[in-house]
Length: 391
Image (cartoon, rainbow, N blue to C red; front, side, top):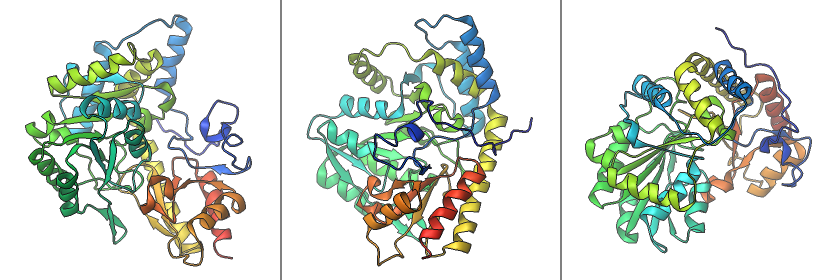
């Protein structure tokens, strides 16, 4: 089948936080929302069909995945990532951020140090701090429009602060890096050496472009598999975030039991039925839709790069190797503060993006824009932004 992603669908009054939280968050009601990381595309028809059939059944009681789900996800990961899963490794949670909180609580104590790499998805450091652990930062280094890891600082931060847990963002949000196998091996070697448990957020694992290939952290070695928790979900791949269903992969039996005990403390017993239905259909039948969606998104990313280069070349576009999130660099506007840049985008250009400071001080004068939207919406947003920044 051929799928179209050009239709603009009105999401207002659908409980969507992208559109319906503008007033509550004191944003202009007429601002184009390209901030939160979900797609503006309807999900795959096979998923819609599976959910509709279940709705027709009419009973929505307590539910758990069965062989249909396990078969579908294992087949997806072996074909897409050359990674062989086992049923018992998977724990389902409402979301990846929930899983991060469970891992922090299960494997560290109050006051322990947890390492992250800013600029990074802000719930990482918020969740660490709110659980009364110490946030330790190994800042990523932007070189030639590409983020790199300072490995000397990485190891020094671990040793100096007696880090217990490292939360890796792979692929990286908002920087768009797809870490190479060598980079991952280097991080793994240091973490194994210093007995640091790795929690790898791989929610964007399917969304990589060109020759960039995602490596599941647990596939690096047997030792890495036994020292890691892999957090995945169909939510980014198939636009299912609202169905609250994630796959937390833990090969180590003891770690899995400790993680499950922490989940049990919350009283979370059964995952979302809609999530089970959607994930099973997605992994079993949604590949063709996803491949076409990814191609469309990549063309959108190239469009951003081309449009900005032509209309406002002072804005530097960090072209992502993965994810559908594009990091826009406004640091060339030296006459403007970070707040002035954000104000001009939101209140004059009338485009709602994610302010880079949300991701740490390293994100000052950066903005994150979501490319998973119809081209016409993206073009309108870029036109409005570039008009304000060429004055």
